[in-house]
Image (cartoon, rainbow, N blue to C red; front, side, top):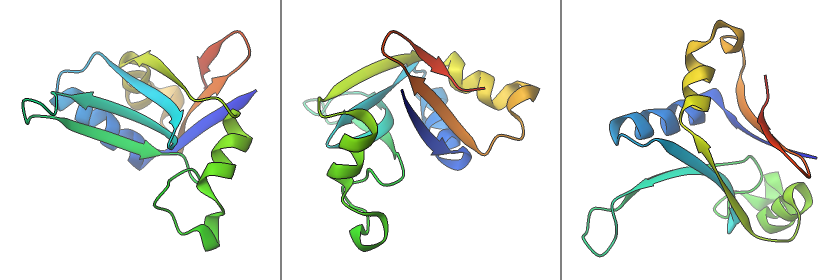
Length: 120
């Protein structure tokens, strides 16, 4: 079982990006790091834009003297295979509008062998 978490501030940036660009979903990827993301447009048309929010310790641009090797950290937390998952924007909406989550400092998703869930 692995849990992917980002700060409330990171989650807000992702949620705002999705709202501004009318995105119905966002994703999580473990490839060149581990991160939550949303994208819009495409590079061919010159209107590509994205929001990438890295999991702590899994950002290729991080200070490795403080946080360790991003590749090793991502592999240890989420396994060796690259993968991606999509989630409905409602998960972020609930995080910011449901009173149950009002004091939560992190937005977290739990990955189990057979399921994925929002951590409450």
